[in-house]
Length: 108
Length: 116
Image 1 (cartoon, chains in turn green, orange):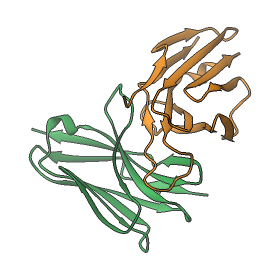
Image 2: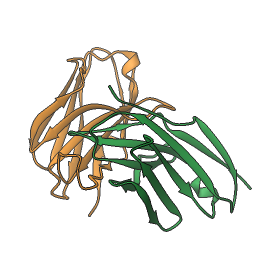
Image 3: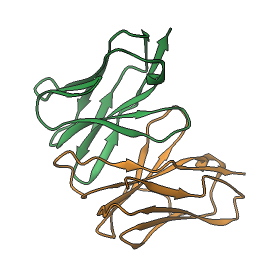
């Protein structure tokens, strides 16, 4: 089987940096993706790691360590609009399977 | 055009009704998906179509019946649903069926289904 674990909620302050973790128990997957979903909206793609290391896209960075079965999403210069749920997901075979998601709360 | 379009946005149906959800993409993507999402839960994979053929059925009850008329369209036919089937149904597409090379999936806005 495969499972991805994420903390259910994280709270951070506007302008700060936040890291959201994802640990997984699966093998043979192609890469780790991150998606953002606002309330009432659809998930949107943020970042993808095929290889170990850091990928940076503007204020968002994602990290993967296959040896540690671990990844994280880093958000910098937090804005109120970043309040949303964030899902890690593995690309395996023809499937993209999502973790349970982290709800990010941002305080002014 | 990076859109996946779903209709209807909202649907209320009785347990004896037959209805369909529709999905369309014009990005030339070769894989299309149906996901089900309940409140405060992650999207849950239901079906995968690869090159217009059903490649994965995640043990979905037969009251849900997918159909892929062509490479741009994906339908989900609904019949004899239960109230617990009420959820957001998300259609998605990706450039290719395999998981390699950063296979990003693009979601539609979803169809909110209520079964009464």
